[in-house]
Length: 302
Image (cartoon, rainbow, N blue to C red; front, side, top):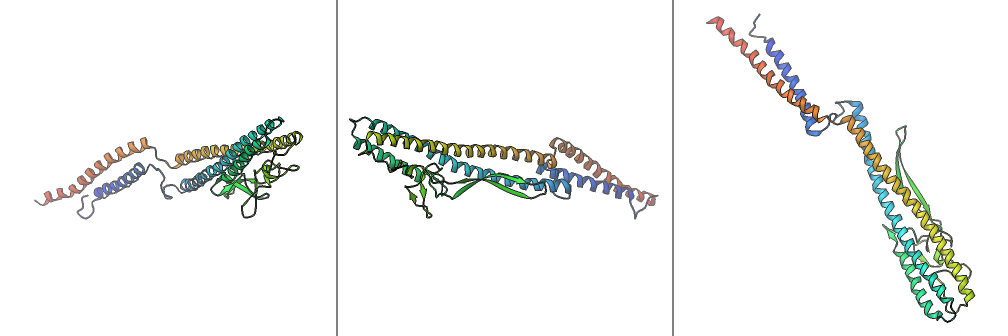
């Protein structure tokens, strides 16, 4: 039966065209954005997981930046300690030279005094972003961010590595400071006296060979303490490097995992796009044919 009020064929063709148009719109969105799931309505479970993991990945990126800042602090301190060890080594050489009775001890002391002032300059200059790890108040501590952790219960936390300062002769700072941050040249590895003098207060102008020999032992003890200090800083630096490498690998893994959940398969989407465009053209023609069928009714009244 043919009706001039209801065109079932046109209605069916129009519904098909609408479905194809909707699918084509989704495919074009996937092609343009590169995402198979871009909103919760596409797949609520995968969208939720991907959104959480993207947030975590952003936090891991922030931790990586913080690790870089921590590494810079430790590297600055390590550079200062290495330089101080070299300078104290030179003082040790001067003392060995002064053991010779014919050497002018006052002239040697002038050289030692210059090296002592250089030690103070090195300690005061080893600051990064307002923090100095080689010149600090004993008992204080510093810390660097080490990792970002998401617990199995959904909680998140950031862990850090702490470094406590010890301003004794066998501690881990070259010089101590006051509460206000002013240098105390009578504390720390270089300032704390062992017997009558420290590396920084050493004056051999009027010393006997026996006293200079004792000073040599004192300087060697300071060198041993600085070497130990350098080792501690090195272990922290090594841990930071490991954490940085892990954070980078973890970020890549998360990004890859999220991609598997929500990224569009561009080869597949390209094939779908071509097929849907063809279907759309055919649906338009089908609708045109269905609409033209009513025109044939006119021939019945001629």
